[in-house]
Length: 199
Image (cartoon, rainbow, N blue to C red; front, top):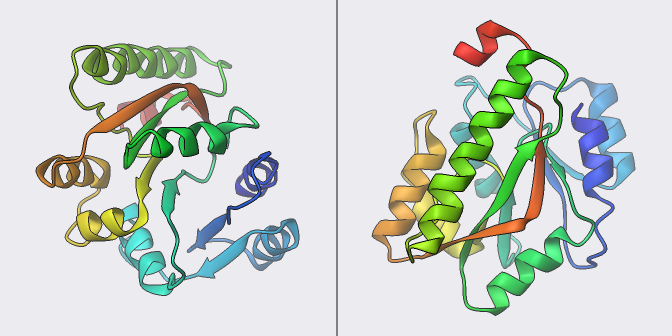
């Protein structure tokens, strides 16, 4: 799944970006495939099995002067070939934090449909609705693009499995306004079984 998503995400019609994969449970075959596809792979041990731990580990090893960091989950696919242009345009307009429109990649079970419907309701209220009122968009956990140094600073004390909400609070406390990019799609794999949906 991560290899297929990575290959698709490397097809952006934007020239100045690097795709970095934090690999904490991947097989050697998958790691080699990611490297051959053109991704940079940061292999790590993640005893806590949390996204926050993986991101902290990656940030400690990324020393280049990046401008923007975009967080994606392993199964996420950028839904527009010009996705990064849309993000760049928002930053050019003065935003330092944007949340893309995460939407369902699959509708192949009742629970996937329900999960996708829940996502779109949240997009309508907490992202599109917030921005219509002049408030910051809520974040989701993936599809978030943040000015790199601001991200490092605001993520420095994030530790829980609700890392997206911790980051959101820190960004808002620091005075950032979060834009919602309704037409920049991030396709997300929705759960197919009740146990995962409940979780």
